[in-house]
Image (cartoon, rainbow, N blue to C red; front, side):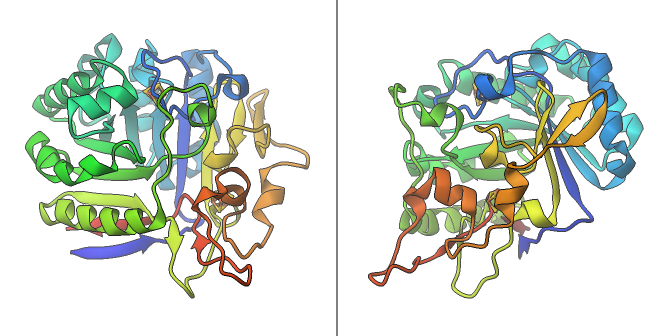
Length: 334
Ligand code: SF4
Ligand code: SF4
């Protein structure tokens, strides 16, 4: 098994394209913030134009269609085919499993590299408390339908204090479902997670619990032949900190034309670019790029500002550890 930290590089980029913010679910940790991201649904002409904007580097760009729930867009299949025509390195649809508009009948496995399903519990009970009643069954049946048609399925499990106890049940579940890639995410303190009115307020887990649980589960899953990716989160002493915003090309595009380079800036009007008249325009200061330059002993500056709960300090006031960029991943390749 090969274990590697996926270093940032200017030679590869990721385009996270939110084509709408509408969704049929209301997950307790949903990162969509309609005040910041708008409520419109891009028409297919605009989607094609915006894909074209990023197409000069399509051959080195992984494209992920997101929402909201992207299969609620009636023309998602046309967007996927256009992305294939433009030559994007890989094309993924992230879905909550409901697979609206018969999307599996409108595209083929040749059009798409991955259909990525979000599941936040190994049991219906835990998942549906977080994501909504019926969502567990929707994911399982969606994976079965997609698998039967030959699509390659991956899964995203967003870890919080509400579901980390069920991660150890995931290896047998993902094997049974025939998943080819498994992504572990850490819950971000943004979007709905920041709303104090939420009955179910999920939180990040402690450093000790994260380190005790995540690498071990990842290795068990990878040992069964599935590629596993999880965020590094805590840098070990001496490990170099890098902010992806300074080094890599990641773009998070929203239907109100805002373009961010850091996902944890998305709750604020700090976007570094905006699409205006079909051009990618750089925003004036202050924007997220001004924050990327700050070199602080705690590592990620946005983490310190909006989710400092995962920091700790020695008696002399120095940080006990640095927080990695949220885009820094560990990858286990069987
Ligand atoms: S997290 Fe995804 S599936 Fe859940 S409400 Fe938000 S957009 Fe919908
Ligand atoms: S998560 Fe932190 S380190 Fe990563 S891009 Fe954002 S500000 Fe930079």
